Length: 424
Image (cartoon, rainbow, N blue to C red; front, side, top):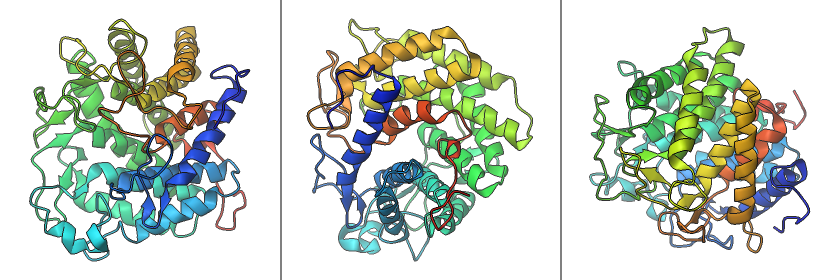
């Protein structure tokens, strides 16, 4: 993808160029068992197993692209659904594996299940998101998979006493991990809002609110708008978790700047979802969203001598992992745009313009396509935490959202399609 040098970063032409380029780049990820992990040039890394979270996120993207009128996107969305209904799904015991079992045999995963949690809330949240978006796009079989995925969430992951989600199980659903995580819970909020849009069941909206109330209005507020992400099973924070592995891609030590920004946007979606559902709308949703945003920007942007958001901070707000991740600036732009739409405050637009210019200057890869997923502290391409360009989920949503408008979920901003491809 070659972006025009004449288009203004964040402007209508630039956003459309990026949208087209990202979908084109993603098209190279299709493999027989789903969607693979893409390298920096857009080729599938053959040594990596096909993962449920990547396949789901790509299925979500192609479902959105189909709703946007991309000619071959439906074929890719259907390919992802086939993978989620086939090799990634445990047809015997239910739920979804983290990756395609070795040799396609689920027993190979079960034999390793004592040391590796194999059915986790994180990939299951993306199964819900993918199937909800595909159902909104009218793709065959999507609604049945969505209903099945929500049933698994209900039976295996939702913990009523905690009003939040369990982290993971082994492959046989016999042993749970002695850990709870804010990352998977956050993505369940996103997934539950999408599911509520498709099913019309406000139970999922209320559960999204319950998660947000626990983690943001509770934990983050109690920690001056820093969010401990790791917890014991009774949701006691573990502030030193992974101190010896601070650059973990899913469970890093410290406060993760990008998640605070992502939460800020999700609270805006959640507020609108509650309003449209006729549910009570707590005043704290917008207040907390703005506090999360302001503190994340103050603490995480341009704090170590170069432009960009650092990946993580310690509890004294000192940078720990200084790499700049593409998903963080993508979430920053979405949060700024959503809050600008919600409040009309000029400060959000100023941030948005600054971050689009930064993204265009440093993250957009005009030679190979897509965005560099990771930059070093001097804003040069690197791969110490995230090798290659695994998927386009964050970047695609970032360039799509300002074009389609604010709604309860990303897909809900686009007209639904029926099974024959027509608008409902």
